[in-house]
Length: 497
Image 1 (cartoon, rainbow, N blue to C red):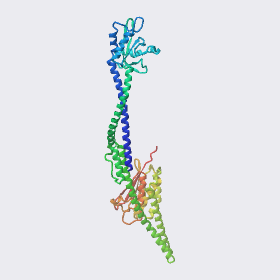
Image 2 (cartoon, rainbow, N blue to C red; image 1 turned 120 degrees about the horizontal axis):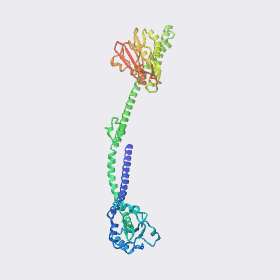
Image 3 (cartoon, rainbow, N blue to C red; image 1 turned 60 degrees about the vertical axis):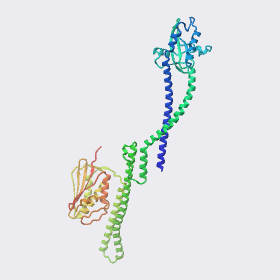
Image 4 (cartoon, one colour; image 1 turned 180 degrees about the horizontal axis):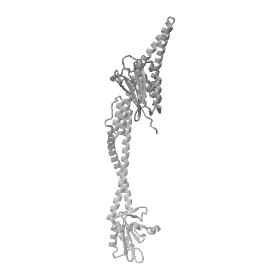
């Protein structure tokens, strides 16, 4: 329900965002269209009337001059011309300019006002217009409305020794006033209709677009719901080909990781139960022996000879040693299983460690009539590993080899230098291990029957395997029935620098 609510909120946000973008785009388009349409109208008007000023001069100034010999404006002539022009098109304003651009006369200006005589039109646009023969889109000054520039038509005249310009504003004040009044109404109609159409179009397009764009998102939400409901095998199909490839692929990988972790937890739970059962069994045996002999001593102490009493005490002592060893192995293995041990790697001489272990086990081997050999050449390089963990692994392998080697047999420890590693091999002459059982001996509490049954908790080789895993190495076994067994692992050579 929560995922559905979040998904709906996201879709609503996407929809409103999309609508807002379309509305803003529509408003921007409307203003742009109005601006461009105005420019289009002005440019069209200027192109159509580019020769208007020259036609006026050619028609009206043939027999008369707009300026007499005294420099006075022929107001009657000029007034009739401008009234005729403006009667046809009230948007037009006609001005008579001298050669410097000063406004000499126009019926649209109040010439009694002092500021009228100061009005001047910039000659740069006029000269550009004449140079281009009216073909360009050029804006010039509007004498009546200096704040705004306008399209115009202009032509130069020379008559009676006088020079000047006839300057016609093609969009005068009356045009601008009417245009402003109509534009407000136009904008209202255009804005209202445009907004309604835009909203309808945007709503339909937005819903379809959001539905299409969120298709992969809905699939992701659906997959999460399926996973939440217990369908742990459900995955997004072709995740790398979807629009949300990164998220979909990550979801599939996350689901795989969670499923793997769940399987590990189940496996660990099963192993925990198995471990508790096995521990209970293995602890019960030595405890029963110890308890039985202690009760015997308590009940028959007076009847036992000194020799019997010493035998009973030795048996109790061996039981205690076995119990202590078992508890130590369980504690060590539990720490390795829980990843509580971090290897402290350092360079050391594996040859020295091998000599020490050989010397320590020599007496034990002789007591059991076993020939213990150490084979290695001179100049064994330094290895890079945790010396205490490696020593523990070799000791476990030595214990295992001595335990299963019969009297008169031999155990050989080999240190073999390789190109970038050093191989450690521990070989015995025991009964060997069948091929089908070789994969099982490294599992906790797994032992194989090889002739005479030997005591052991079944944790020694499991501890060796865990130690090798901490060193990113592996332990290998080579064995055939009645031909002995060899265990081998390699440590990396220490690289200086």
